[in-house]
Image (cartoon, rainbow, N blue to C red):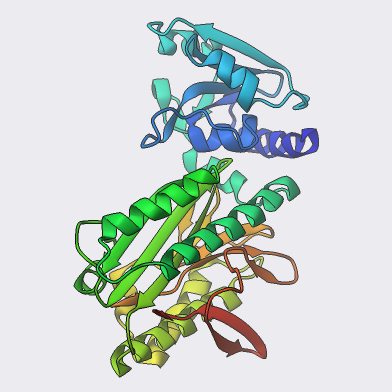
Length: 367
């Protein structure tokens, strides 16, 4: 792990030099998990982006500030002993003044932060770019998370019973994920008309009678993956089949075009062209198409103007949709190939051939 954190320190130090800063303050949980926690968790309120710790990084020393409530657990369960980094643990009373404590450490110096705390320069976007290329340790965790989440998602989808409410399906999915230590960060379930009406259908008491969509973003050890699976009771009508064939072709195109050094907007452009070729030229305008994923549900979303280049060992989750259907998995962009980490090989797939390569994209499962 010391090799991992050494590389991350180098990235941060390069950023500090570029921004002419003495140090950086991390308050967001994703940055604790990425840097100091090495996959650890400093959240208590899981609906919050801010963790229970404040990490103050300087090239010479790292300060970790938290309250008497959290300190023992953070030290015992979330900080590795072999980090090979000088950490000063600063414990404050639960009713203590965090801002004064931070100010005492950084006063007289030029600091950036991931939240703009105390008027520091907000460099959250620059920090997010540091997270994009995953280490070998992160890749190993990511592969396991992807496969386990994919298996759970597909098993729950296969066992949906006609008449189940969306809440019932969501509850089952959340339960099975939590058993594996995986937390759902986004959980969208829709049945029938709601699949066609809403791109972000949070669960309701609506019953799934014919057509269903299950969407998940799930986090473990800081890393997040995303996937979608579609189900249908009975034979698909021709219109829906045509839409799904089209959307998996768009998805495969986006995956195929995702290569190190290629800007996000260039990949998106190819996807938009494929929408047009499939006869659904305006559907891309109804929902974003995805982008970088990793320590956030989407680190950066691809837009026509986003020229951020794909880097080796980064993760992408493309999520093209055509009204009534969607295709989504999480991929790792490797030097020679892309790996779909949420693919289980236990689902029904459509083979899409692009430039002589076959991409397996999830079919609508007939129940």
